[in-house]
Image (cartoon, rainbow, N blue to C red; front, side, top):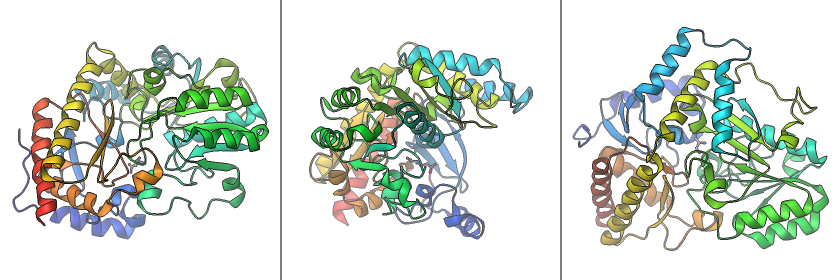
Length: 438
Ligand code: HOZ
């Protein structure tokens, strides 16, 4: 069904709310990319969501490809997820004590991701990566970390070096406020450049605690790993006694049920999860080999804790969501609708004569306004962000909600039907044409 959008498009209530919001919240938001600075304009304030649709406070309806930035693989307000959360809430929202749900979700995670022998639940992806690095440093007794330009692993000090996502969108990939000493322990290298990693190990091998990587980069837009890149990282880490950390906050349960490590057949020492594992509630997780995770308190000396970790509402949403995607055919369905979208968008751009390069891995997709393939941070940054901004608004006005930044992914859910995709492709065709006619 065609989404219902006011003609002419108007967002007066969102504009008023954004005015108020700026009196109370830095930039009017609680997470920077939401402020629409990457595309200029006023963020729309959302009132509700159902399936793949969202409605803003002015009553405009959108086909949503943000999906809360990845968690909503089953769509908004899936009845089984809502019911699980409702039931859990009726029994109490937090105890600060162990529950059966934590054990169940942990077992489900381990079954899907066999490299995880022990897992610790936390409240966000940031907490997961920050804690994983602490464990890696505790295990190895080393301090340096290798990450990749355009990789975003949350906002912990030391990871905001050449960072993607919001920092890249806002043009501040190295944040002020990060102590120089923290940043000095981080080596940021070009994604997909294995020789550079080899050279870093030659130079600093004995000091590198871990390599942390999004196995499919998702925070400079989607950039798949080059053939052999992940395997090469595995070999270098093993050879030099460093730990390999896969940040699968985005890719976990997304690019395959077992994440990117299942899709590419490369096994990390530690995996960070988030987003889908919490089914839309605040959950992160890190886990890995037993001998590594045995360093975590109270088993071992590396301290990490949290009052709301393993929260019963979040565990309930996670369990319900993982059950939904365990059903036969779920990933085949995601692949089918996602490739339909990819093909349709590429066709629309081609027919309009717009330089456009699509990267997709499973149900994560970015269309870059770039003349050539995007394989790393440098090529991602060559994309025409202003053109993306115009395209973004043209889509919004046609009832399609994309990420408000060129450097993010579109997420396709089980709730997107072929008809939703076809509507999106038709809207994109018109939006591409409008770009060249303007
Ligand atoms: N860091 C998220 C995108 N990769 C944005 C989170 C948000 O604004 O909600």
